[in-house]
Image (tube, rainbow, N blue to C red; front, side, top):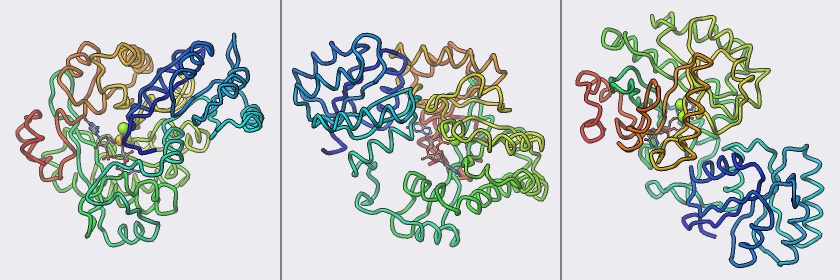
Length: 403
Ligand code: C2E
Ligand code: MG
Ligand code: MG
């Protein structure tokens, strides 16, 4: 199968919210023709009539359960890749998988609910190994630890800044620092090509200190122009294993004369919830040092209100998979509405990520969304271009003028 094709997907789960979440997570990175069913018989009816690439199957359903559906799939001699979903513990998934293999079904994996973006990405790349976005002849090239390590020590990494705007006024109120690799052969590379290698290795500690150091140096250098703004810096969840991180960051801020109140550290929702206990100590102390905290890519994990309220977040960034196309999609609208209500209940500011078109923006402006980021306003910009954009406060023209 080729990753550029559209995958026909059938998902069977009695909970329609899970179907919506799965659809959005898949659509985020892949072209999919998605058919969700809340019961087995209707799904089987479709599967009997046409070829399906992947079947997501919940094991626990009230009428016909997943084990029964597997039996029928085997009768139909279905060859699609099957992914089992279960809220139960792993052993049920394992046993169902064994049973399905005995019936000659192609069960590729089991996923514990809640489903996360990371699980979907792992799943799709294990199924289709050539699903990278195209970039300057890079399709056949992958980087390894040594390449990335060398790039970090040779200072080939640099920071871009994406403006963050107040809504509905559309004034630039800050920016998010986003790393880029200035590769001598391939040009400017986005984190897609290297951030996993960094985040899964010991490189992550020095790398994040490098990012924070660069960011603080920029703020100090242009402090007079920037002092009214706030800046977001991404951290990896693995950084939170370093119990000295709050002190190191506070010391850095003070050596660059950057008030911690100007800085919000972002952590991705899905990874954070998996490591909550260990991370909480460091997160609380970052807050005590005066830094703000943002929960990034909200909606791609599955945090409960209880978990969210345990962490001293100040800001929630709603993932762009819910924003893109929201003007025309009732499911996305429901998720946005619920998230805004949740954020406000917890006294969090809310940022809409990835605003790309004016229709989505005018829908978002019906809600009390505090800030927006996205290509509609500006791509991630070189630091010097960010300064120019700030002088002019002309967000709509940024894309043409400054990148
Ligand atoms: P993120 O923190 O969620 O950053 C937002 C990403 O969305 C950026 O991708 C940005 O370029 C992209 N984006 C912004 N507006 C739009 C839009 O309108 N449409 C679309 N389709 N995309 C938009 P980027 O720069 O490729 O970064 C990807 C991820 O890499 C970031 O996601 C973040 O998780 C990670 N990352 C970036 N810089 C750093 C860093 O310094 N440290 C760490 N640990 N992670 C970083
Ligand atoms: Mg971010
Ligand atoms: Mg994000």
